[in-house]
Image (tube, rainbow, N blue to C red):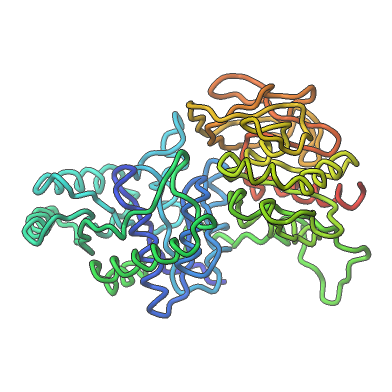
Length: 462
């Protein structure tokens, strides 16, 4: 088994330094050179991986040591990087920032150590010259277990500015592997939860990724960066790659083995309104025996033929509330599916879609609740325990999740809540009724593969 995939982790001193531009640009530039590039993102972010996928032609994958546990980071990485020439991992926030109050857990630094990967530090060099050496020295020396192999300077103002920065870093002994000028192509539009997803601006996103690739190819030493990636040895611990088949079934299918029953159709919401999902979820559902069919609630007036279960992940239904409401045939189809007790798993955006209304617009009416936009951002990792038996997990199951929204659902929990959450305050949230499990909590099913298996089994028997 190949565990020595050439790899780089792209980190920064803080958010806003240009990690996404550099990481996506590197992916596109290496792919343009003919390399098969595996894209990864540290943390629970759903949006950046969409841009990574455009750059590489492969699914963007997350590496989250909080949601999945540190022990799964390397196996999930190897699963995504299988058959690739090189992997690029975009970090999260500042390099040493992770889960609040948990030390290095879920930080870019921790993931770099778990992967044994060299780090490239992206530094916003605007408004500084010689001071950049002190900044970089601090990040290089803070944790000896993190190997910073070089720096890419971002937002460089001029040739003179670049010369001053390079001179300072030469004295610090850290190679400069690129210098990027301030440029419009580096910008991509944002709104209340970050970048606008690829699915909402496909043509413009393609152009933006191409511009990032050109910017990085022009301003970075790609040969040296590739050489640095190739200094990575085998992933520490001799980790085996994660596979959804082994995870859900306990053993790979035997040669010639056939299923004794048909595959239940699991409809998965997609399109511009529902863009948040982890690639492993569909893989787990498929490995558990489901026929996964993606549909678009903005366009499709009926659920896929033969739908036995429904998964509605996160996204931006608040942006498309009028259009989702106008698709009354689909709303009625979803309500009818839930009414007959079919399994329905809804996270965050899916929760809003199942409410009676969202910002005054009629939704599916599956839940006796209303949803509205809020000025308050709810953000953070959560420790949770299943309060009620559901199509996803028996009561008492412990999972870790993540919340990220600017909406409020009233009431916040049903008669049978989905989760008990310990932080930031003790509370119950979400809804379990018949076959419906609806909650604000985003979870990563690779951490608890029984979720997909249980869901598909319920699809067969409902």
